[in-house]
Amino acid sequence: MKAMLVAGVIVGSLVSLSVAQAQSFAPAKGEDAQRYRQSALFMMGQHVGPMAAMVRGDRPFDAAVFQWNAAQVEHFSHLPWDSFWVAGADQGKHRMKPEIAREKDKFLGMAQKLQEETGKLVAVSKGGDLAAIKPAFAAVGASCKQCHDAYRAQ
Ligand code: HEC
Image 1: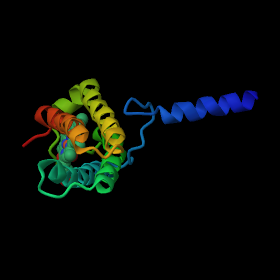
Image 2: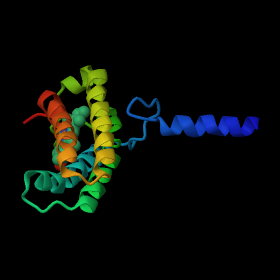
Image 3: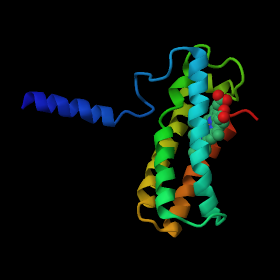
């Protein structure tokens, strides 16, 4: 019984792991961390694209496709952030503003906001109602933009 309780606590804390995690899952090598982060952000963008097209009416709304893309964005919304602080991950080609290093909490707060809004989008998208999806999608887009305006160089 005690062992089950302990296991429950461990599982519970794994589930609640978010950007505030103490442990980093980023690659240890700077250049790998940079590529990992940029790849995750690229993938996130690729899965936002089809949803944006449906919301704009440029592509017919397909609830299953929308829901699948929302789930991918939710997944990728957890991956890039640790990799911003790996030594050497700010070399080479990148668009990180130097403020990221100085404003870690604020930056991670914006990452967390994205995760929350994306979680809501996943939930709403299960209903398959485009009218309800639109504001949830706009909130995700706003959280991308808020961080890019503050921390992504042109
Ligand atoms: C917490 C801050 C933050 C949030 C939230 C955020 N981004 Fe970014 N994004 C960045 C930064 C900083 C870069 C530049 C990273 C670099 O050059 O290494 C970036 C880069 C990118 C890139 C370029 C990746 C590449 O190098 O090919 C894409 C695409 C992108 N973001 C899409 C998105 C989308 C879509 C969202 C929302 C669903 C989003 N981002 C949310 C900070 C953020």
